[in-house]
Every structure is written in structure tokens, then in C-alpha cells.
Amino acid sequence: MAVIELSPESPARLDPGGPPPAWVYRRLGLLLAAVLVLALGGAAPGTPVLWERTGVLTTGQNNDVVTSSDGRFYVLDFDRTPPVITAWTTGPVRQLWQVTGPAGDAGTVRYSMTAVPGGSLLVDVAGATTVLDPRTGRELWHVGSPVSAVDAGTALVRTEIFRPGTEYDVDSGDPGELYGTGTLHTEPALRTELRGVEQATGRQLWSTVLPGSIYSTVSGQSIVVVTASSLRLLDARTGRVVRERAAAGPVWVETVGDSVLLHYGAYGAGGRVVAVAADTLEERWTGDLPDFEGSSVTCAGLVCAKGRDDVVVLDPATGTRLWTLPSTEAVDLVAFGRNSVLWTQAGAVRTVVDRRTGAPLTDTRTWPASAATADGEAYLLSRKSPSQGMEFALLRPGRAVQVLGSRPEFVTGCRVNAGFAVCRDEDRLVVYRYRA
View 1 (cartoon, rainbow, N blue to C red):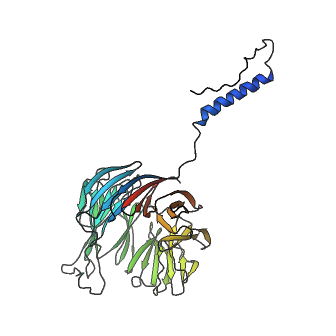
View 2 (cartoon, rainbow, N blue to C red):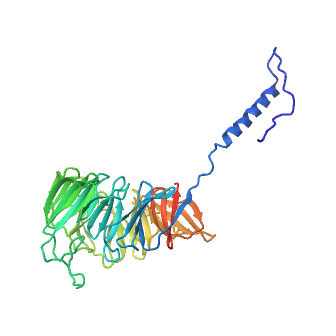
View 3 (tube, rainbow, N blue to C red):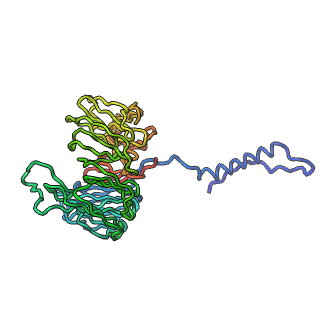
């Protein structure tokens, strides 16, 4: 045990008739300060670790990773038939369960999984959905139609009914319009059934049948439905029609923020567009968009008028012109938070600009790789470090790039969620934990 001798002298004798001399107070003060340093020194917080590796898994290369907001991640192993799904925790890395997934070959059909925040796992195989319990991997229910989550407890099942004999022969390569989300058809659906169900059980809460093929999207606790002749706003829990208005048969529909855009030109081309509010179905503006004319620029979460010479970003609430991007800029535009837009190139964030003016805010060209968090609210940036390893940083709306740290391994293809990332190192998955 270490012993600290504060003074080799004899203790002072106090004069009962008066106050002690000043040097006594000085020594008592020094003694108290020393005690406080010893008591608080060990408890003083050190520099926080912003980026650390928590585990490594050898999984092979033919797999996909899905992250969850509760700190878990799921690996879909496509080297096995049917694919095997394994659930893991991130801190520390530990296997929770492993199950055989629904039958399907990811090389020939669409095979994907979605982790609903606070809800279930939705496994989509060629338009059929299997719902799994995230705690055990046990199958909760199955339906041969696409399922989309409304919230943690409610889901929407969409079933299209086609005329028999209209299935598309994929081996024929015949041109023409195709319809459907699973099996493709050469004609539109005769009718579409929408069903609100409990996400954990599949128990039906309500159902409605609409003529033809429809477009539907979730907006808060409501469902926007566009048919060939009407717009409807349904209550997600009851299916009750909250609002309805006539529509003149839009050709295709998209949702941008809290606006629904009804396009009356051919899909992928210009033409008249009508914007309505997703919560009230009230018309906000109408206008004519130019023909895309082969423009390779994509706009995610934005309304853009794409022409031969430039791309004009429009206000989704009013349709007014905000700013222009020259066609010489070979970038894509992605909405980022409420007030900014990302310029991306080959999947990497190049710069951040103001959403209203297009003025540059943050230059990120020194970070050649990026991966969005599952909610799209932040981006993990990475680059080679001078020591041949990797440096990592976090990009958030309205903030400067925050450098998190570095690691000696070289990784790619990160999947990022709140507080952790799973990245690929050849046939290994490397798990990291970060603090913003």
C-alpha cells in the first residue's frame, strides 16, 4: 500500500485563547485538496471512445446484413439453401438465434428482410411475406402478398387479383407494360384488396377492395390510396375513409416528404403533375415537368424538373423553383434532414448544400466512402488513413463532420444503425460501436 506523508513535522499546538495561525489553515487547505484529488481523480471521466471494434464474424461473402434500431443485426446466409437467418447482439457480439428462412434463391428472386423498429421482421421473397419474431426467429404468420409496416404494431397487406392467363413469360423477353409486385402480368389487376392486420399475429383488423391496380403509401397513422378515379385517405387502424376526392387517372404516383405527386405523363417522362398534401389530400400546386431526355440524375426525397441542360429543384409544397444544378455536374441529389441536400456520386457523399438555395455547406470529398444509417438521418463516412488502416466519421444534418476514430483493418459495405455499424472485410463481418 502506498503511503503519502503530508508533513514530517510535529502537529501544531493550538492556542485555546485565540485563533490558530494562518499557516495552519494553509496546511489544512493543502490536505483537503490532496484528499479531493485522490478521491475524485479515479472517478474523473476520461476521453470517451467514439469508435471501437466489438467483434468479428467469419461468415463468407454470399450474405446480406440487416440492422435493427434495438442494437441487433441479422445475417442472411445465401450460401445455404434455403437461406439461413442468424440474429446477433452488437455489444458484446453474441448469437441470439438461428433459423432456416423461407425457401427462395436470392440469385433468381427478390429476397429481402426488413426489421421494423419495435416490431417484427418482414421477410419478402418474390412478393410473398413471412413475419418472424425478432426475439426468437419463430415464424408468426405468412401471406402470399407484400406486407408493409404502418407502425410497430400494425401492418398493411396488399393483394392484387389478375385475370387468369395474363402471367408474363420472363423467358420470352417480350416488350410492353408489366404489372404486379411478385409475379409479373401483362395486364393491370382486376382489383386490389387492402387489409390492415396486427403485425405480431396477422389478425385482420379491416379490409377493403378497390377496382384495378392502385398506389398506396403510409403517411403517419393514415394510408394514402390512389386509384384510377379517386384519392382516398384511410385510417390505418380501422380502414375508415377519412377523406376522399376525385382524380383523373394518374399514370404513376410518388411520395416526396408530406406531398403526393400525381404524374399524368408516361412513367419516367415529363408531363403534367399535381401535388396534394398527404394528410389532407388538398391540392398544393400543379405544373408541367419537362421530359427527362435521358438525364441520369436521380432525386431522392426531392421534387426535380430534369431537362437536357440542367436539373431544377422545386419546393414540394408550392412547386416554385429553388435552385438549379448544371447538367455538367454528374451527381445525384438526396434530401438530408429538413434543411439540406446531399450531392452524391457513385454512392459516396460529395458535398452538402442548403436545401432552399443550393449553397455549399460542407465539403466531404476527402471521405470517398459513405453509408446511410437505417433511418437516413446520418451518414457514416470512411477513408484510408495514413497508417494504411481506415478512418471513420459521422455526418449529420446541420453539423460539421465529426471524426470518430480509426482501425487497422480495411472494410467496405457498411450497414449502419443508431450507435453501431457492421462492415465487410472479405469473408468476415466486423462489428463496431460508435458514439456521436
